[in-house]
Amino acid sequence: MPALDKMIFLVVDDSTISRKWLIEMIPKKIAQSTTIIEACDGEEALHLYETHRPDLVFLDITMPVVDGIEALERIKALKSQCFGCYDFSGSSKKYQRESLKTRCFCDSFKTC
Image 1: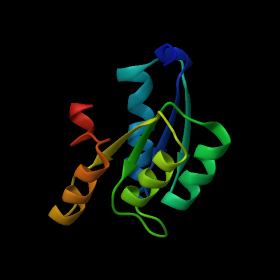
Image 2: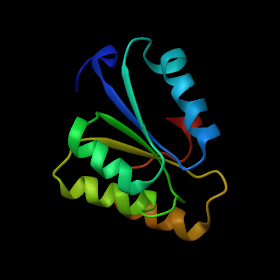
Image 3: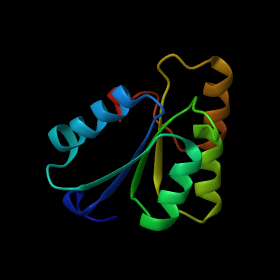
């Protein structure tokens, strides 16, 4: 894995407010100088993942078109060593159980 300042982050959330908040927090809390790309749904995330091959993907679970669980499963199918995180705030127990099956998750942004 590259040094934090060389990493590429992909932030995926259909909520513009949540997405912008996380994009603002990454340089403050994780890496000051890094590349951050963003998507508003899982389908766009898959396209951007294949194009940019980010090192870390922050995925919301409940999104239109392709949800976060399906998007992460597809990313993993690409033989990716990328790490995925889910934001469980407001998500249902069904989605939380599904995400446990992926074995690639965080329980909230606070614990990542």
